[in-house]
Length: 79
Image (cartoon, rainbow, N blue to C red; front, side, top):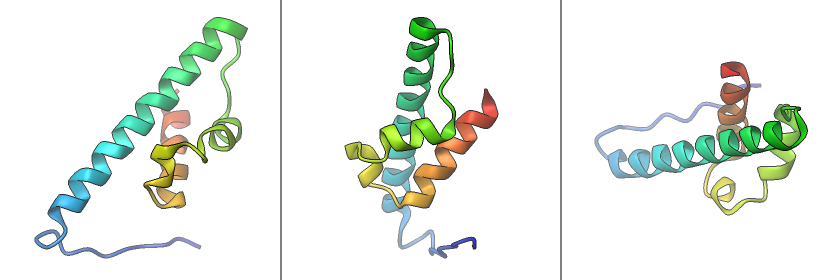
């Protein structure tokens, strides 16, 4: 099931800006963790490993869970 939230951009512009900043920082944090794991172990963690490691992070708590999941899936796809 796909969840969709419809927002009017004019009334929620600042909320969307804040959300996009948090998503960017979360993406960069997950990317840093992947690179760090690669240097230390020679293996890249997959989506499930990263999601379980980062889902309780304070940045992930600021976002809906499906947004965090999609961000991590996007990172895995980019690799």
